[in-house]
Length: 384
Image (cartoon, rainbow, N blue to C red; front, side):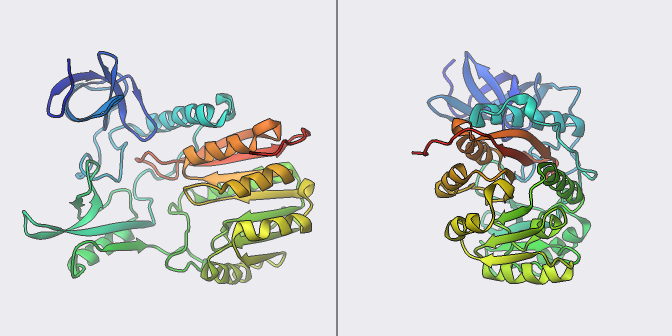
């Protein structure tokens, strides 16, 4: 069969790729199809054909999986915000564990048995404390669509509620819809501010309050297990991790280039009674060499919580050369995290002891991971 857009095919799903799409084959040619489960037979329509793969949209589930459940959201399958509402939650957790283990093994060279089971969220719906909705003029319908980007393109799906958002966020959605932006193309950030934390409008804060205590406990126990004296918190934002982890160490320093976030971090430290740390407004690359002169690498834990794009090569090269006793890497983007871990572990300079995934984003493809790296006794070779 020669595949082309518009052709209808029967597909048997073999796997779920990282990102949420099902993997099927037509005469050994890979076809990706969303909103399916392993073992399902689905009637689908080819939407795109590339050199090595094709994509399809599901039309009908011919043979459903026993793990399939009814999505709570009426927009699921159109809105691009969720990928897994059709999958029972326990199955989501097992699926994410397999995906993370496969990804870290393939990209990061990390053994699968190093990846712990995914820590579940106590509230798989109604958990998001921050969302961004968009507006777009719907010319055929002569109305303004307010909602999220569709899964199948750049159009905005008009929504009245979001099932994974906290109730207070849904009240804010109602307000935006009642008082719409004056024109299309506007992005509106809706947020519930965290209690006892000063967070400027554009600064980052974890978007799941329900699993946040488990994330803090995971990172704190990882830090304690190394027994280091100092903590260097890079990409520290408003100081959350440095402040939460201040007790196990003698002193800490947080580094963040956003000056408004650093001012908030200093206020947050005062609010939480932390007196053994400081915050610096600078880029990581500017100050890290000096920090390694102040804090002896064998006595230091370095915490990385970078943007989704990961760390710059210069930062990884410096860590590879200086070898702090421990690196704790926190990320919601496992692919770039695995890439960075692979670089840090070259020549046996660091060893990944544990990767702990946490389901901070139920019903979606995303997952937060905490990796514990320890310096070895091997002599590092220069990174090219």
